[in-house]
Image (cartoon, rainbow, N blue to C red; front, side, top):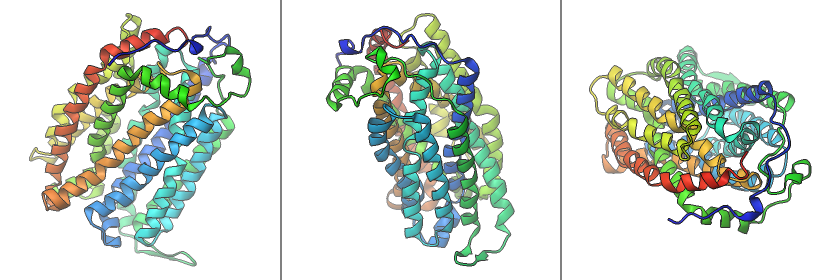
Length: 458
């Protein structure tokens, strides 16, 4: 695909505003990381509850995947687009994040009080609204805290929160589930009877509410950089016409297309993580507690190394003048994880499967920071929230497709819940190589757009 130069209205002198202090920036990264940790950690804790929710609410594999795994994801993806367009690029981004965390806390309580499948579905749909603005606002702020050469490292460090969220959620969630599994159902006035999985939802509300306070009270909003009009940094930013956004996207489709479609394929495959606890239960007879504790320890120890290495590698390549450094690291990670992603579900030993799945997660995470930085490095500030929202829309939709896809394969293709291992292997075998190929095809177009973008992205 042909890639065009950046439209002239965006080529302006670098912002005269000095970069924020390192202490302020890295504190912000810490809070962002904790927010990512609780957002994604909650999802993995919920995945440990699949079997009891399915049993208590009399659901099929496909139904429980749609209600618990997909409902929030699709609402999140849809709502993130108007938030990115009408709010993130114009108003306080930390307010958007903090308000969203408050909504998440309230909807976690709602999920904990839900006694029917319909009420749980409504609560999960509402929770998607709470997280919708987090990604666009966070990445927009990071782009104003760090120059392009250091952004991949900052995003990688922030996403350690994701890996710790994954590991800690499995570890602490499994411990919590084990602790309350022997406790009888709790009858409360006005509320009714609470089952153990409902109590877990109530506990999940606590970190959301605490982080909402820290975000609103302690994180400093950075000045906007990379604006088409440098003087606009101190004034209210006008809404950029949608035509200008789509025109910029279309003229640089050779760079954006592989980023979106490669991400979509990877997220569909990685969305299968929703079925990990049922996989170990149905294939090896492990309880969610047994799987969660072992997997959590391995993930906390090994997975962050992939994130740090990916950020380091992208920064090193960038210093050597490699214009496609970010996307090249994404391609490398996508290739390296494939044997482990496809093979873990097929091996006969649960411990070997655990090691292989953690290796897959660690290797694919090499590209997490660089992929996010790849988008931020070629997007003008006024449209950063909008295009970041569209990128996160694809991320969320892909992750939301994965769970029901596996459920459908179990119910309708293999017609056996115990065949989940083959559904997992098939999903990774189809979408993993496709993602790697798409990223590879995007290297040259992305390098051209990145080189042109340096005129304003400073």
